Length: 281
Image (cartoon, rainbow, N blue to C red):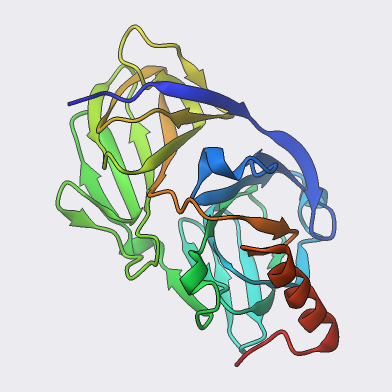
């Protein structure tokens, strides 16, 4: 067993997106090789409605999957396929944009803070133009793996014989929400072929055993090769997202909400959007 070490620590940057939503972009600034097959991770969260109520009005996507994980609050969504729905506390929406979809995501005013994350996963070249689809996953359908001193909430993938509810995903990623008790020590088994990133969003802890550096909340650790992760939670415990997937190692042409393999494909997508031929049915 080879424990993974930290290759690089990433610190997010505050950005304004959509119609003026303030959020922290943890990665997604162009270094796609480092995070492959993942493109972007946004953490949104505020007790001030002015930071998020403008939402994300109608906009296109092509060539990617977006995974929205709501920790608190409510977001209403609708799309060009006629789908409508609500994502609220503990729920996940997994959207495969594929050949193209136009949608909106609009927060609802709420007494409690609105908090959540959105991850973008790249689609392989041969799947860029698949038919768009949604999977709405309720909080009660999430699967839990209970370890000694830690709990893994499995959104996608399989851990310890427990299969998450998001199945039939093209790149077969792992997407886990891991909560660790204060001072707990445990090892997570990993697939050696995967690129693995962990985002600490509560507490702090080490991913290199007792002697490793503490990774505080608000940092993403990109990990080196290996098949295990030696976790040690700090005095306040820790909570982190684990994102793992086999790198696609394909060219990336990315502008705004559309990600293709070549500049000509990207230009074609935006031309089709302007001409009204973007949606393929």
